[in-house]
Figure 1 (spheres, rainbow, N blue to C red):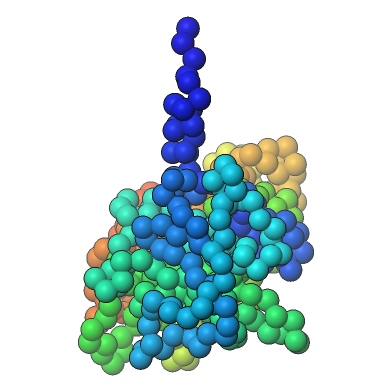
Figure 2: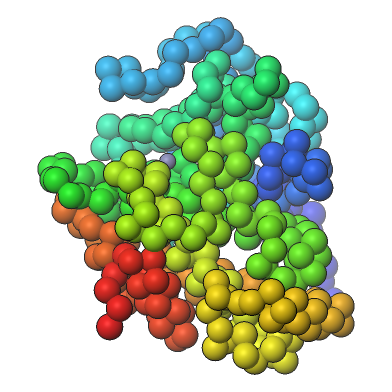
Length: 394
Ligand SMILES: [Zn+2]
């Protein structure tokens, strides 16, 4: 028998990826005070201090920096704080989560975590829409500004200020994932060059980015675990899923479990995005229910019901049955939720390739998502988009 030499083992280990800490929800949310240790697919020898790599780099300004604007773009050329280095094992899970250096490391990890997920759904690497001008995305770890924004070549993160308590967006996975959603969309469809009247590109961009945030959040094992334990397998209850944009950088609280239909929205882009996000969320929950029913973990009548029409008695009865099953078979619930998540995530990602950023309408986007869906997801998406008045009922 021949054992692997240390060098060979070390080379193999380096290819496993790189360890980081991520808070799946901001650490001030009860139950999420501790970060998760995650493995990003990028090999250790491809990440330099900062962190930085061939696709992105972090800067942390020493002094207050003005947010980027149309006449001011990267690269940042002011004085910077010293770039954080990995530990002796070259992983980045070596620093204290309450240190300043951690902000940029965390933001970098969140961006890669989201890209790993959506590249898997898309089936190809995401090429930045600004790559002809800037080969790499610049992540600004902290800007003294109550907002976060992604733009041409950059992602910059300010801090929310609620009642005098300042919370950096660099620690807010939801906010970062949402902004990365904007970057992914523009990178896949291209930039709209001739926006026209009645064009829905921007509402769709908000809806897509919220879906990216929601679905990416569901990729944390610990988050799924906590979510299912807390709701005892019943996603109809108020839970982490529907406050994924709680401290949204755009200040508007967007709820994935809203009941808004198109006729109830205004022309505001965030408002117009709500029915689309709602349809996505409802489809994930319904697919999850179907999977539970198929595995004997929920009442079969749940599949025939519109959950929005459930009477209180029915609701309580269904909830009890689900709770009882969850006690015995929690692993089945995890499988059901991840299957539902991926069926919807995949459909949204695949739909992007058929979207024209000019003259995009929400109904066209909805039909593209339905056409890209496989199995029962297609029918559920269709009925949910119809209920939301995004498409016509057939
Ligand atoms: Zn947005």
